Length: 217
Image (tube, rainbow, N blue to C red; front, side, top):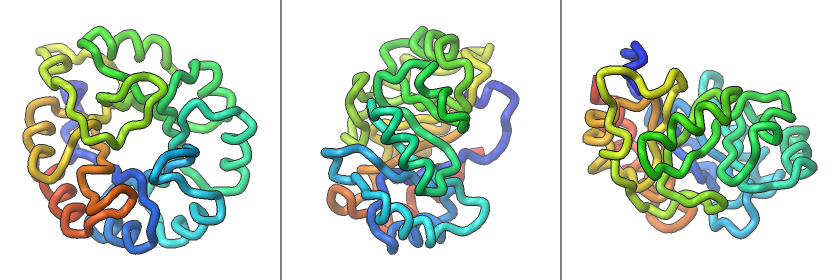
């Protein structure tokens, strides 16, 4: 994780944004990235017109991430053609070939069972820009607020992977500093942990989360 020689401040992504005020709150708090969900059935799902409206609120140097879950290549291609997304996040059972076909940088979510899960994913998704470690099972969307056992991936003296690792799953303003201190991830990803209700973010929680995550050096 940060054992890879990275001493930068932890990167923060606020995911599952559905309202303009939540985008503005995330940007104002200092988030490095925002996540837009394109998953039918999710309470945070966006239409293409909704996503385009939200992106108008995103300034330069804030990364826009589009999240997909076992979507068809036609749907992913349509979204990419109509929405200015900087980075794709695949959250399902997508193969490495599927992820790579869009010629765009991507993150692959990994369901963490033990430390070997990371090594297997790194080998399988060698073309990914980062791996996102979550508590969800393959084919299920995150945002459940469930925390996985961080001891499964506690870093040793040698880095377990050369890939940047993003920690997700059950993070909130109260536990994110401890998570960063213990795991030393490249970045953290939060959705339900900064919400007042599903799909509606709480500006105060966002500020506290970002501040706590970035407080650990």
